[in-house]
Amino acid sequence: MRTIKNIFIAGATAAAVVFTISSCQKGFDAKSYAPVKPLPSYNGYSKSKDINPTNLVAYWAFNNSLIDSVSGTVGVATSTSFGDGIAKGKGLKGALNGYVLSDASPALANLHSFTISTWVNTPPPSVGIIGFFSLANTMNFWGNIDMFFENGSDNTNGKVRVHMSQNGGDFTFAVDNVPNLFNKWVNIAVSYNETDGKCSLYVNGNLNTAATVNKLTGPLTFQNVGKVVFGCVQFMTTPSQTKGSDAQGWASFNTGGTDQVRVYNSALSAGNVSALYSLENAGR
Figure (cartoon, helix red, strand yellow):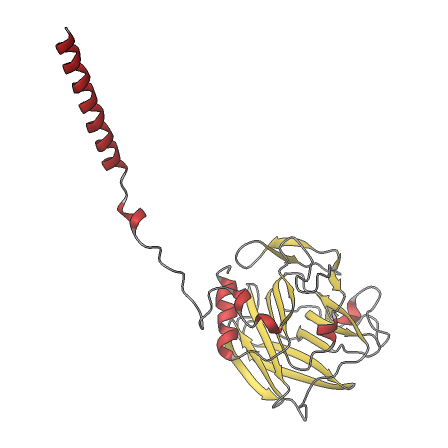
């Protein structure tokens, strides 16, 4: 009996070993041993946060929050909400008479050169210009920086306007005939370089126009710096952000979306602007 019992135990053990080996073989996945393919890099970068980090002076991700993650300042919303963003997370959703105000940090107030990158998703203007970023001047009609789509814009002839102030003087970088700006997410990046006075407009990472504006050159110098405004130009808020004007009938609001707003204190290279677009578009 002991011999028969030993034979039974040995047989059962062998069967268990065979079953275990068979199970391991069935569960083996060759792909799990393959090296992980790295994500593509752009201009040497794999994350948007790694692009010129020492020059980044403000960043609003608008991922269910109104915080500028560089200064820690939290904005205040009027009639706005959050909706789908460009890739992952949320973005700011505008509305008629809707906007966000945020205190300007000293770094923003003292910009001499800059790059401002923002994603915008809006219909073309139908009742008034659509402002999407302003750095207010509390005394003048226009702000220290104003970015807006001009009246008469459409998907064939988009009209981008960037107003800048230097020691109280007004300078406007005006670019017409920009196609395909509306009813979808579009990245708008604008830079000013104090060294040569050159202004550059990039659309979805591609350089559209580079030019000087009148006699503007040298470092920008802002006056009477007020708040940062998202969703309209400075005089369309209630109350107006400036003593220089109340609301105008030819101006309106961004009723669409705004996302991933970054401000740098330098004019980024074309390669880095392109990389920033690609990485943000990929949610990285």
